[in-house]
Length: 239
Image 1 (tube, one colour):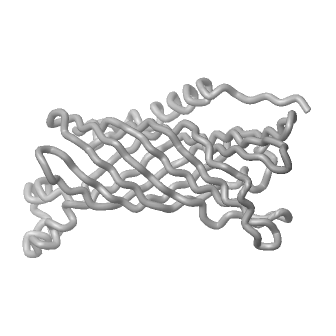
Image 2: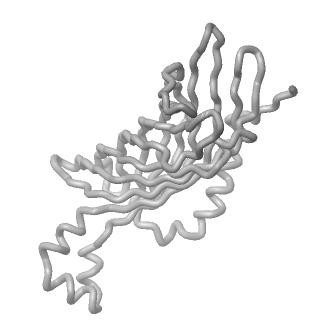
């Protein structure tokens, strides 16, 4: 079987060009844009057709890249400048307005390599994958010391495999033909973010995100769940 795998650099380049063309018209309207890059460490959790957990898969790392558009759930400063029903409603409920002003939501596009390695009966194998998709997050952020912020958020992601292979012994098998990988995957989880203001328009941040795949398809051999943890750093550009 002849096997061809597109290079990671090529995939990232194509993805970034398409992403730029999609989001460029909306940059002027953005409150803040977040660029994130880091590592995705993925645990493969496989349950065979008899319901037994298989433990011969080990986590492996891969690239994680994301561009997200972030908003404050309720911008009280902007709201005060408007004369509307919403402004009147929240002006009469200052505690509710203040609580909502702590919450941020973000919608983004991302690229993940969700990989794993292992061995069984002295036969080594590895999984190398390239996923693209979207993410959505919502949660509070608090300023606690001289421009430092701590944020906690729930995360929902949708991911689609665009390239991948399994190396088993000395042969490659395409994962794009494997029903456990090539279906659209939904992930849910949480993230913790620590950020620091560099100047009024730029923040630097570090982020840890843990998610797990949901509604994984059942195959004749069993069910596979992916549990990635991303550790990343990034820059937030505020308008």
